[in-house]
Length: 394
Image (cartoon, rainbow, N blue to C red; front, side):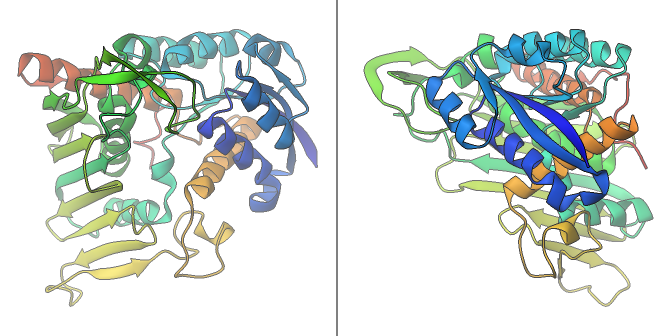
């Protein structure tokens, strides 16, 4: 069993998910033959450092450079706020560390492009947090689509509607700053929808979009929280600089019509993430609120008048590594463990297996075209990216 030195940069909610993902690898992916060793956690917040030590990290620091300077660190996770991704990723590349980074990879397409190209030039394996790809029902849907079971794919719809920012009393965090977050719900949620579309039916080639900011001001925070956790706020208000809502029309390279929608301020849906793919011979539907059920209708199989609910089982993705039989769900944490497994397997084999930095750059180009279209009301072409994208891999 080989020890794998792990460093995690930023120990908020996502950093903790990464740490738990690494810690689960020996059990879930024993064939890798690795025992991850949580060497370093970097975070400027003292309470996060204390939590990291309780999780088993051997050393903590406020300076991520200490993590990258340690030759015993084999892989690095980058889980900080969007505006720090570019700086930290380029530092990791300079240090020769394979990295697993959350999306959006940069605050704009230019930053994402620079990261992706630098990682490829350095020959580094990467991973990006497009965890919804790894849901077993998504993997089964992709297999059906790729097999031709749905016929010619005609159109796809995806919407990711959430309420995490629906209260106007919620604090004005970095997520609402164009400098620190870039786009708002476009980068936060729509990027997942765009990645799912590209993973299932191919590259998005052009978009037309509209956006809205429905809560224009928010109270300034008096402290710092973890993730979307509530913090005390002042009576002083500041401006929200990016969008709360987005609706998109698009086309793929193959002419598939695309509809995307996202909101972070919806009153009602908590995390209603849905994707539907329609073809000339059938369709599939998945609501991530019921992740173990893929709704499938294939023409000619006696299902003309309704969908069959196909429960995930061991033949769908990595479901069998987590559950003994159909009828049980995989958690968000489990999907991050799948991501960790793909990342580490890629590092060990030298093969890009996880969603890549090039995939993140591709998503960023979609996001940027969406923002530009919303600003000028025109259709925008989505630039092609270079590098090892995995959404188009057979």
